[in-house]
Length: 152
View (spheres, rainbow, N blue to C red):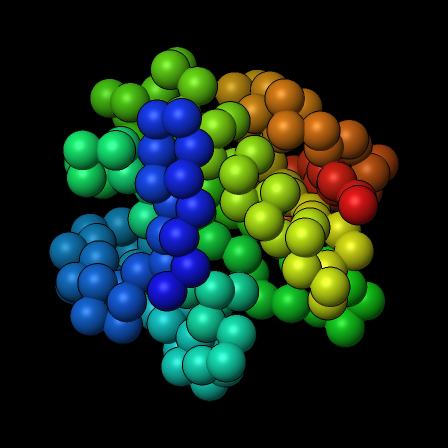
C-alpha cells in the first residue's frame, strides 16, 4: 500500500476489499463502471497497483472525504489523474492538498514524465485545483473537456 501524508490528510491506495466495498456501495452507474475498471486494471497489474487503484483521501482522523486515481500508465511516460471530494468537504482546499501530494509522488517515479487531467468545461473549481497544483492547459480537448498537464 502506498501512503502519503500532508498537513491535514492521508492519501493511500485502497485494498482490494476496500475497492469491492466502494463498488458495491456506489449507486451512480458511471462511477460504478469506472471503479470496476480500476479494480480490473489493478488486478491485472498487481506490481503497479497504485497506478490503477482507488486512492482514499482521508482526514488525519480517518474520515473518508473523497478519492483520486491514476488511470494507468502510458508508454510515453504520462499518467492521467482523476479526483473528487465529497460535496460537504469542498471549498476547504482538500482537493488541492490531495492532488498536489499525489502528483508530487507520481512525478518522483522514474517511469513518469508528465501527469495529465481533464475537466468538464464548466467545472471551474476543478480547473482552479489543477492551476494551484501547477497544471497548465494543453490546448487539447478530451471526452470530458479541456486537458491540462504538469511535467517534471
